[in-house]
Amino acid sequence: MQLRSASRYAGVMSGTSLDGVDAVVADFAPGHGRVCATLGAAHLDFPPALHDELQALQAPGQDEVARVARASLALADLYADAILAACADANMVPADLVAAGVHGQTIRHRPGDGWTVQINDPARVVERTGVTVVADFRRRDVAAGGHGAPLVPAFHHALFSRAGRHRVVVNLGGIANITELTPEGRTRGYDTGPGNVLLDLWHSRHRGGRYDEAGQWGSGGRVDDALLAQFASERYFSVAPPKSTGRDLFNAAWLEHALAAARVAVDPLGAEGAGLASGFRRVTPRDVQATLIALTARTIADAIRASGRPVADVLVAGGGAHNRAVIAALARELAPVPVATTDVEGVAVEHVEALAFAWLAKAAVDGAPGNMPAVTGAHGPRVLGAIYPR
Image (cartoon, rainbow, N blue to C red; front, side, top):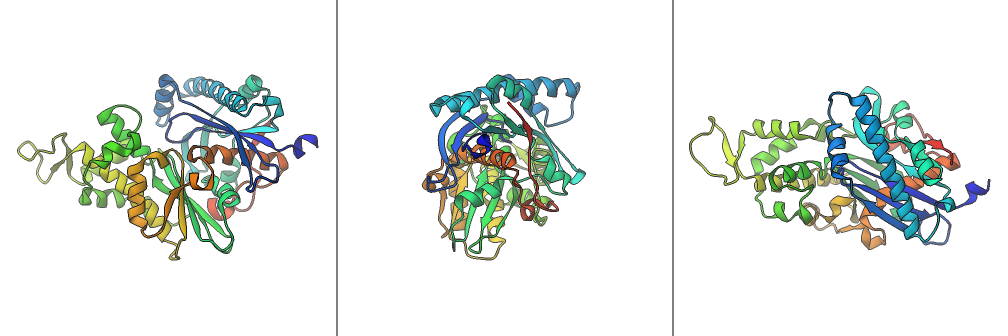
């Protein structure tokens, strides 16, 4: 009973962007002026070999069972290091934690077929840290008929809802999702489509590096309206929620198919002239990047507008909140609605999802439901996560 009354939990998140691991230590004791306070945090980049293997595991390949096992061990060690670093930043020892919520890395997400896969080795994290670990958050919701995603809207409600205020929270990771917090206290949310995933892929292919720093390269391109229309014709965007998506859909093959369907030939110079198949035209890689920025902003804005009700403000979290080109495009789409990052609420954009999994770990330890059936489509509230005791 003493553990259940304690208030400090860690949360660990590595998302679809595959940029690394974020860990936080959160205090859920009353008196902070919000549901929790961040006591310490850490970010660890994925080593290049692990990053490349996690990206490769998003698609079928040879010897997958052994490769997943090896990647799970490497991830567990990184998760453990991140928890220890966040504890050090909080000037505390791991034994002070009740538990750590460790989401794992999603490599496949097929809720329509009744399954989702997050790789992890929670037992190894326990051995490395001496901390009780809560993991495997999505599968109970999927077993109950839900999508298992997004899970953060319940935490968004706890952290950002304000009585009488119609607010939307955007999580801009590899995949973007929204949480609508209504003045009446209701919450809805779902994955809107690609956030950073296609932007990172395209930038890496044409410029190197894992992402477009602050959106500088993409902001210098020109949006191609015909190509944007082709991107936006993806059926997923018109499917009614609840819904969720991932790299299973929005990947290199999807992008290549859309470019071909738009009869676009990518050329660094965008030159006109001979050598093109009939009906094709040349577009520069930078213009494609600008058009992908527009796609991310447009699909998020369309989802926000779908409620048909005035919105007081929009808060953006996640690594993509650092992409100034995406934020500017979203602000143009939603004007005059104010668009700001969660920093204005005193919560760093890179901490929100990790805090959510600390909150979900606390819910699991307390035996409280962690899902929102109205968001995920599950048959009812469920306690999420498997507990690995210290």
